[in-house]
Length: 322
Image (cartoon, rainbow, N blue to C red; front, side, top):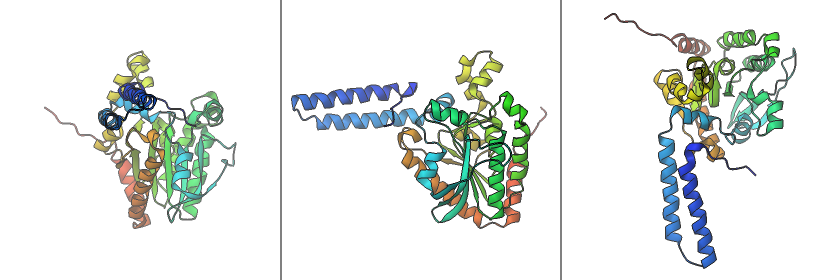
C-alpha cells in the first residue's frame, strides 16, 4: 500500500480532507444524513487543489517533480507498453540499474524505450543509485540506441534524474566522455527519437539520453543545467535560497516551451502525476503516439536535419546597440 505523502504547500487540502473525515465519522456515529455537506466539502477540496496546482511556483514544481510517489520509468513501461524485453549491461563494465531499457510496444508501435530509474525505498535506491547513472549507464543507453537504429525501431527516452553520478568512480571511468559520445552519436541515429522529461531533468545526466526530434515534458517536471540547491549554494552561498534559484533558472516546462527548448507539455492529472499515475501514463502515451505518427512520416534526411536544427538554434540571442 502506497503511503500518502503531502507536500508543504498542500496543507490547505490536507486540512479540508481531515475535516471531511471528521464529518464522515460524525455522520456514521450519530446516524445523521449530511450527504449534502459532504458533497460540498469534496467540491471545496477539488477547487482548493485546482487553485494550488494552477499557481505553483518554480520551486513548488520542483517539489512535485521529486515527489516519492511520482511514477518512475518502470511504472510508465508497465502502464504504457506491452511485451517489454529488458536488455542489460554496456558490454564493457557492468549493468547500471540507474538506466534501464529494452524493446517494447506502445499500441501497435515497436519502440526502444530507455529511461532513468529511481527506487521507492532505501534498498531500491541503493541498487539504482538514486537515479544517478554511472558512465556504464550511458554506454548501455548508447548500445540500446544503436541496436534500435540497426533494426529501424523508434527510440523513446524517459528522463528523470538529479544528474549523473559525480563521484570518483564516475571520473575514473570517464563520465564526461560517455555523455559527450551519447550527444554526438544521437545526432547520427536514423530513426525517430522522442525524449520525455517525466520528473527531474538534471544537467548532463539528463542530456545523456536527451537528444531527440521531440522533447516532451510532463506538466510539473523540470529541466535544468543545475539543481536549485546547487545554484543557490554557488550564487547565494546558502542552499536555503533554492526557491529563489528555481525562479531564476527558468526550469519549468512552461518556461522551456517559451524558450523553445521543449516542444510539448503533457498535462498531469489533478494534484500531479503522483495523485493518479494511471491517468498520467495515458496522457503521456497519447502524446508519444501522436508525435511518433508525425515523425514516422518523415524521411531519414528530414529526421536528421530536424534534430540538428532543433539543437543548433538553442542559445541563440541578438545584441542591439542603444
